[in-house]
Length: 56
Image 1 (tube, rainbow, N blue to C red):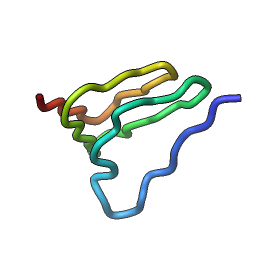
Image 2: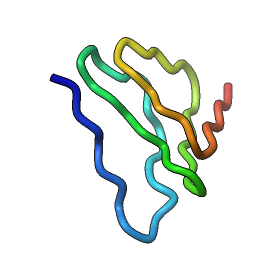
Image 3: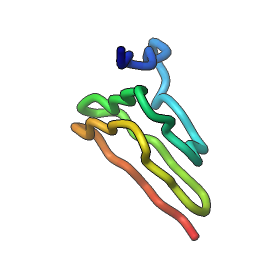
Image 4: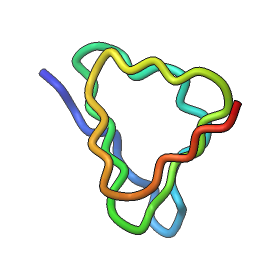
C-alpha cells in the first residue's frame, strides 16, 4: 500500500530526493518546493502541485 510522506509544517519541505521507491507516494503540495541535485529515479509515484527543482 502506498503512503504519502508528511510535510514538515512551516518548511519548503525536502531537499535531495534521489529515489522514490516502489509503493511510495511523494506529494509536493501547492506553494511548497523540493530540490534534487543529480539524478531523480521515480519507481513509485510523485504528485506535483508545487515546484520540483532539478539541478545537475
